[in-house]
Amino acid sequence: MKRTKSGRVMTLLGVAFAMSALVAVSSPVAADGAAEVQREGDCSGNADWRLEVEREDGGLQVDLRIRQDDQPGQVWDIRIKQNGERFFRADRTTNEDGEIRIRRQRPNTAGDDRFFFKAIGPNGQTCAGGLTI
Image (tube, rainbow, N blue to C red):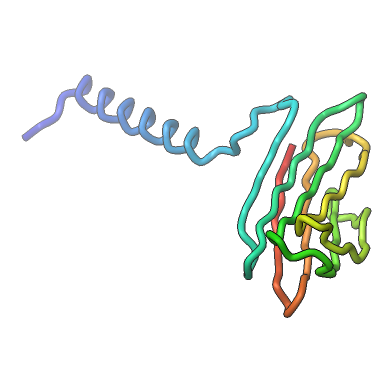
């Protein structure tokens, strides 16, 4: 069966539309200029994490929370990077609710800012994640 020129054009338009929809679905959740980006996930053991970065006062407010329910007194080695440069490294201990919360103000650099953290807890449990704003 021979296709007409208009049939080929319609097929190409359909393929282009499908590809653009696929790209839109796989793009990051935050659009350019988003005021806040948040990611969360599970650690390798019984803890979970949430990393949130918010545009604030011309800079970026970074908020990392690690929660190990009802396990106070657990020590975690935590490292946080912005655009590949470490700006935080310390041992922190879970509070009476089993949480650790770290807040830091960071500069908003030109272009995208990429944040990544890694935390190592009791028995080698690991949390890691990142986001781009």
